[in-house]
Length: 131
Image (cartoon, rainbow, N blue to C red):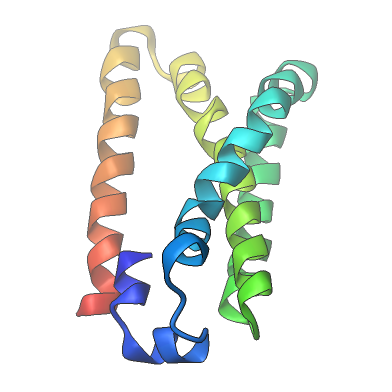
């Protein structure tokens, strides 16, 4: 979000949001993640990790299209909520699925690499709008 907020075009298009509204825009993804927490564990246990992971990926793709096509601020905020909701469906079952599928002597390395690469990717992508 910081990369988008640095663009004058984005600020002008959405009416220069500030204060609590800007905070809501930034927090929407985290709010979506917190809302999904009661469901993601139950779905993982009931349907398995792979279907939950696939559902999360599909939710993120749909929300990304909505976010890119946002014509007003409420649509943008809702798309960020859906990204957060779907993101938890990807992040929660992934390390456990990696640990289940990896060869026993490689489990620790692959699981720790998941979290390292996850944050490394987040840091790298946050620079893209500024380039």
